[in-house]
Length: 555
Image 1: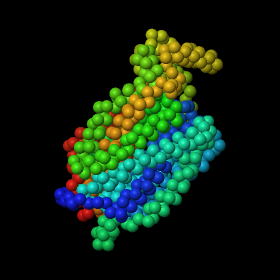
Image 2: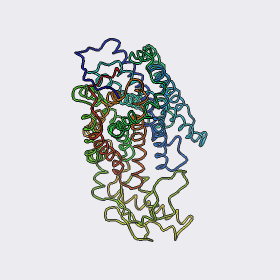
Image 3: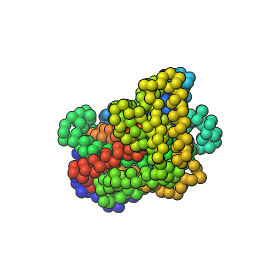
Image 4: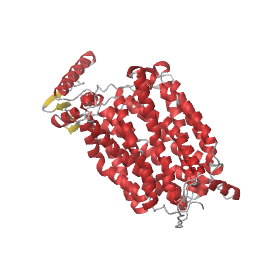
């Protein structure tokens, strides 16, 4: 653990070398995040391109699952490349990770679709996401450590906050490229082939980023340690094989990173998916709304990084988590009212419910795409509502009850598969769906959000608030993690809790939350996932997490 000496140097203006380190490290990391998050932005289109062999709801969850696959392996990338970074050096390790990321991203751009090569397409896509995840697992720790080891003790939060902007800037850059491409070629062409363009042009960003980073020298702290022969010979076992160091990785994960991660992904990616898939805002409009909020909120990463040098890392991070826990439900309810007021009015005036016996209901998720959800009356009812993105409540009924959908005061009984089969069953289901759809239309449920009815200033204000929470928890986190661990194992030790938190707790959030929504029918139910984790982080952080902002990390 880093020493706790209270050493604050006098005023220190950033030198030309320090500015170059911040700029080069940040630009390279922006490129990696750009590559990584393109997939998330285009999840709906990728679902249609690579998972067209399953039903629409399952395909989207699968697409989010492939998105999450990149996060699943990030901790392993942290171990592999963190070890290399502590053995060989910071600079050369993140050059390797950048090359891997660029290769995988470009290949996604030329990968044939499911219609062309069948199941090989999604399998290859998942493999490429795994390569991206491994690369990113090694990138972040290297960049954050490299910048922190060039920073004076009293400006470490400020300096590393520029690295913290890179994830959002990468997302912002990806949004701009996606929006620009969509605008230039039109939505139909974009869905057919234009979605590949943002992936393909990443090869240009790769070349520029590699050239910039090759101009950098090794971290002076690491170089000095290596010359003195005091660097770790087994950083993984030293970092996690003994409780003295390992406990800080656990405390960092549970007391800071887990909450930070779910706030980051809720405030940016889940908000985007919620707009597009739940509130039925068209993809281009949703991208623009998120982009505007990111543009407004991104400077706050620097503000909170700077503030953490004055008052500490811990109070800012935990306050952000606490605000998220208490405000997510009202914020997303307000987002529904502002982005799709017709949907909000319909839900209030004519709420939908499904009356059925639990034993007669399946989870609305089909891993192999073979379930038509027509063998049980409850499944017939719920699958129709899930496909249409209609929120509903579940009302328990006795065994043997034939499921019903209630729209306001109107009731519709689903076909009983025990009494009809074959073509008769298909006809009965079609008639049932037509009746329910007509009732939903009469009750005011919209097929999609009306662009003219979107309260754009309010939507942007809500999204900006969600980004504000992101900047609070994320701006100081790199400095905190760097300060928790000694130089000889820093790259390895800080990378693992960061990528378990952001790769698993955060990266799985969209998939988990939408699966929770599909299972319950409640469009807000998925918010329980980040809320519970934020609450746990606040408690663990208050009890176990030390304050680190006055530590000297040169030892």
